[in-house]
Picture (cartoon, helix red, strand yellow):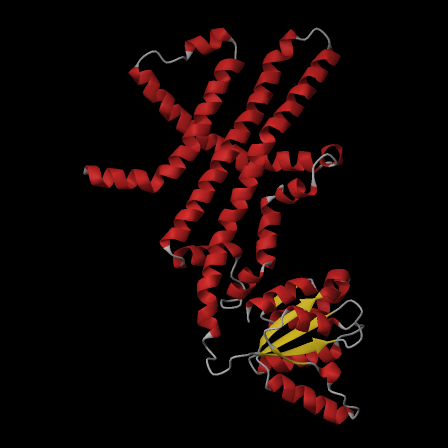
Length: 362
């Protein structure tokens, strides 16, 4: 293997190596101060072979810290700080950052960018699949930025995990020195609380950059995909949206006000009284629209008309945005709306999420 290939390989895996090597090295250094002197002296390197072995041990330890941090330490830490005993001292901004991986992925799935991309692919495409598609489609600078964010997340996670594990090891080392149980319990509680506080900045940084690394490929791919989809109807500068749903709460005004880049057809404002003309107007309006925005609000008792309009729109191949607030508030109703949900291109639980997605289509 020539030197150029070696350099290229090092550049390719540099962030991963450093992201695991540094936390592993810091953890081993921490053990030097935590463990008894007699034990530490037996494993202190004294020659070049020992120092190279320390590098290998640091990388191996860093890999173990990554696994422990991802699956045990970080999830456990998030549960502890979310408890009532501790969470009351944290600001809302910090609480909003201390989200689990599942919560971060849920927010990503609810975002307009992900919903827009998902609408272009089979409905059973998972977040992981679509993120892989996005990573393979974005430009090299965005890929490098994503990798850099993952490196910062990995590095911060390793340091936080090291701090918390060293606190556990220190508490075990101190156990034989306690004369009374209460003394041991008090000292251990203080040690763990100190470790939680010291690790907090690194956890916050890890959560921040993990979220960015998850989100950036989706947002970047959305930015490149959106013009392509919008160009499919070059002769129609402004798309038409049909508003399907109840006529009493006035939700239509909110949609029109927030997403003002469309022409709207609102059946609640057609001023018709003859049911036959009303139905004819509805069907013609759906037929001539590009998008159907269907809102099944909690105040809507049945939604029969909405279901019919969504079915007709699907038969015509319209892009259907279904905001299903009813199922979210009344889970029993959701069983009867499966066909409507499956027929729709995208489904949201709240009106604001649906409006955000609609705005992304303008």
